[in-house]
Image 1 (tube, rainbow, N blue to C red):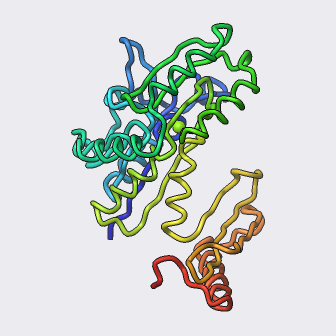
Image 2: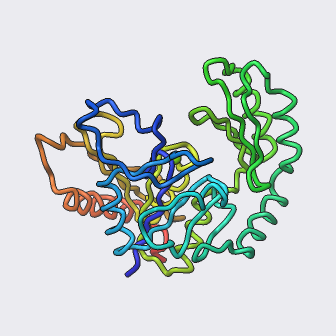
Amino acid sequence: MTTLVASDLDRTLIYSAAALGLTVPDAEAPRLLCVEVYESRPLSYLTETAAGLLGTLARETLFVPTTTRTREQYRRIRLPVPTPGYAICANGGHLLVDGVADEDWNRSVRSRLDAECAPLAEVSAHLRATADPAWLLKERVAEDLFAYLVVDRAELPASWLRSTAAWAGERGWTVSLQGRKVYAVPRPLTKSAAMREVARRAGADTTLAAGDSLLDADLLLAADRARGWSEETELVSEGLRSLGTAVFDHHGHPVAALSTTWRRHYAPHDPERVREELGRAAARLTSAVSGRAPGAG
Ligand SMILES: [Mg+2]
């Protein structure tokens, strides 16, 4: 049995000093391990607790760092675990196998982008032509695959973001704002596609994922879809925890969802039991509408 754990890095596992957002008194701050140095300065950190847990995770599962960072930016990070067998960089554009880029994977991604999306040069030229120096701080192309702008977020007009997203959407690209960066990414360039490839190669039977941003949404959804249920703990409301599962039609498409939410401190249900109950109810409903779960034949 192989469990694949695909984890985003920045703001999920590692944090810059600014991203840490420490609010506790200095003397109570967590001990930190510096895992990235950039231009001779410490840049990213892991808490000591996370470092210990990551060691266990990497021993017991197939831990796959999954990042939008370029290979060069990724290789600066020195996690306190042996070199992972697989790592996903450039939002899925590069797959590192034992630390070495798999050129076949990159070629297959590029041929899909060539077939389905406007070329990077056209999109980056449009960004350059329409961005206003009043809020544009930097403009970058990553791995010849996608582009991003570093912006002064307070000055960035929402109307520019809307019109640029619409323009890009017609050309097979997505535009999203995350922190101080505006990303323009070809729609098929996803972390989830690379994660599925790793799961296939490694014969993983369970896939888990962690992430914090819009570029992780497809990764989280793909992991939930593969295991057949989803959960959240205090992501929406403090003190509440939820589990959900889908009901399928005869094509194996979801047609309804069952979910339950409970107060995790006052009603400490065993989530494993809740999940079994929900799964049973969803299976009954699926069969009542003559449906079938995907992969159930
Ligand atoms: Mg992140």
